[in-house]
Length: 161
Image (cartoon, rainbow, N blue to C red):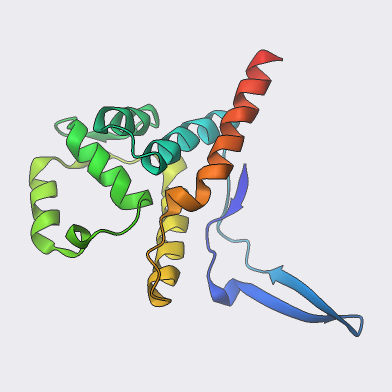
């Protein structure tokens, strides 16, 4: 449940030699934004990530988001699903359209954003930004899908035991 929420090139070192021997190692620095998620938080976030990655219905995506504790003024299922897909799915042309965002914010607005999710979202934004700079359309939910599945398996295993 421990992760670094500041994954950018300045915090990654390429270690070319170890005691004079060539190596293919990476060094990670700057642990100022490390976050530990409880097993329950891991499971809840995994369900949200998987709902986006699996292109689940708006009801399922919004439900996974609500289970994390997000609250909005109107509790709009459509708004919550769009917001989750914007956060963790691939970039779509409408995401770059100011009118799309204006319409979304007219539909509903966030009153409470779960602190457990803030660092996860920060990580998602940093990774997406790096990908965009490399001209890649990076879906965080697709890239994290196997990790989310593992988190759900761990939670199921620990519940059974």
